[in-house]
Image 1 (cartoon, rainbow, N blue to C red):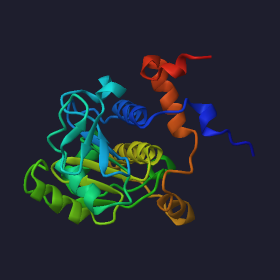
Image 2 (cartoon, rainbow, N blue to C red):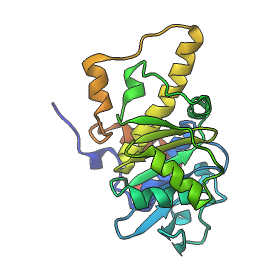
Image 3 (cartoon, helix red, strand yellow):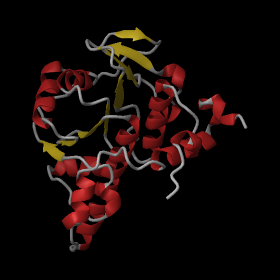
Length: 246
């Protein structure tokens, strides 16, 4: 079976470009609550790339990306850190296995979070990227307070995705590719489950197929992330000028 190399499917990207394309592609998937939400990308040196405050994910460009330390201080860039960044700071201090953390308030994920329920997996697209999904029903206030953020991270434990009651979703992964796939699958899962339950019937996906998806990490599905990157670059090739070259 022929499997094309990833570098043939999209241009090579800098970490800043990866972060921007993750934000823009997820905006198109429903992670679009105005200027809310933030993404961090651990660089392995004690600093994080971060989406800045004040900008929509749909307008983000590589030059807007900031770099922050684990105290939330901006060490590179011209924009401030998001107000809710303590959630990410506490997460990255506690979970060294997490490279990328995505927080936002997508419509259907937030509905299930507000209901305090984990939506069933009804189809394979809902399960892509695998990981454990939990509901965190502790809500003592906004996560811009370190104490509240620490409580949320403690409640998440070793899970990979969380529905934050009265708030939104939190998607964790070891890479940009895995974070994209998990985030897309989570909103698809929440949307599909909402519609299926509105019909009053449905049989969740079980058995070996369900186990296979549940144990995946989002890394093995080469092509999905690359296709969405190409679609975004077709809309705005100036994000990665190299993409305009032959």
